[in-house]
Image (cartoon, rainbow, N blue to C red):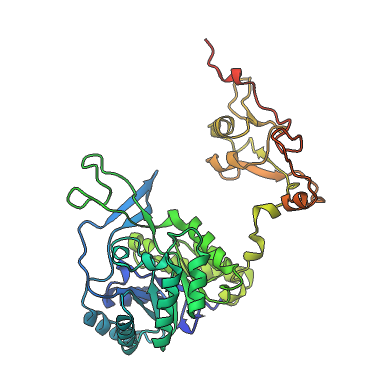
Length: 442
């Protein structure tokens, strides 16, 4: 059976599923409850000088019948006294010595960093996570994402911490930056033991149409918050990939964060190089018990593929992630409709005719089963994505697989289209209905 245990930069845990630093890790009570449910580790809610939070604190983006597809918060770091957090941290380690307890920290001066590092080490923390990501409240005081967006300052603070710390240090990065490799490289140069990402995205999730204030509304006003949840997963995956492929960063262990809710999400992060996984929104939405499904699913995936540990497939997808210029221009697929499964909703026709390449025709005999116009189909996938019936529309390869020509190869041979009306362009000669055909009949 698969062994899910991890050793992340020297921090050991029974599995890679850790709670991210957030409201679910605000107390020893919650973390013990989480460990009882099956979580392998927890990053304590960020400790620093106590602050004052507002009410209310959370907003969400719902999509269709899905609640909290995106989640927004304006809550700050822990507002509980440091002494209480340290006492509870000791209590957690007493009951769960083999689980990972990481102290998330955010302070200002070098002296404060040195002192709080000593405090959490004395409380038994297995590691430290530097919170350089919070995009609201704390950044206005020169902390959080204000540090994450300034590689020079980030590197300096990492160096301070590395000089003082006796336990592993993880640097948590802000995604609110043009190139995630810039702070990642600064953290590596500062000597960090590992990197975690992503923290939340600066966001406004909506406007209250009565008060005209952003959600969550605080006495008629609002502020940008930090966005997370399933909606951010694609961006988080890309940023993890960016670091995992960087030659000066990829020697560092990466803890993946951002929209992880299922075992498949977890596998995808691992395939892109993450070797621990941090979860927040899913635990807030469904409770700590969600880890059981993630753990069972990951185990089943590993057993079926013959992987003994997550390190057997960590980063396995990275060689297949390349730049667009290296993709095969001769690879060709076309849509194929299974008439037996088609329910005649015509969503594929509407999507293709209005939003793509006019490659689907409706029958003239009164039937509602559409057909593919092969010569127009460019294999864009849109029809298969909008189809509500599983495997009704599939994409079938039509080339013989013998040719591999990329944009880079054409560029090197000076064979790319070079004028506005160049006949070498990919869409040259592609059928498009005359504009007048779009006019309504009168």
